[in-house]
Length: 301
Image 1 (cartoon, one colour):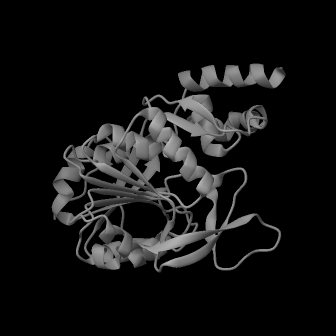
Image 2 (cartoon, rainbow, N blue to C red):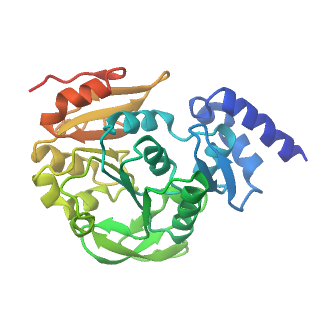
């Protein structure tokens, strides 16, 4: 009874005041305690109009359940970078599909390829697409990497989105075997010339994803890539690869009133931003215009 009342109070407060601003300070443990019993997936109506099937006891499901949103700053960036005439979007590490569905709703003419290797999350994503009534999301149930084959995925039981590929089977940790597909082979299978927007969030495996699609990066066949850079893997190498093939880099941090975006040098290892966006130099004017509200605009060189 007390948990139920607490959940409803937190949901009302979360929808009125976005929880991402205060969760680390006040609400985190209380929210976890209140949602711990909710271990089965439920349909969650989000602020952007999508219906997400997720477990409130999991980190992302908890935030969606209590606030109706997840990482709203990153969502603003992704939506801003998505051109109105987009045809191909790739979401690598799609989880329950919050970003995939948001982009599918924004770019109805695009095909959103959601890559998610965890069977239960991929299943929830398919259900979410059906509940949201979007037909332009294609779910691919495998992981992208430098090579095709199999891998071990270490499961984070409190946050399935925090699960990551391991080099070897660890002792005493929950893990599953997953299929991996070479990134370039996957992109080639889509039958497209270019990718308009790609998001990569694979808990430290980003550099392997990029190595697998190095030919695409070298030919600048991907207009813009947004990827996580929170020191979980070889983030500097991932950024350096993109910069080495001519991509411009912007760092994304979470500000009080929106994303804080600055030009970032791949040679500067003193401070990694929370996320990075890489884009082709020829698209600098368009990117600056789309992110103009939050960006300290790079020189048009």
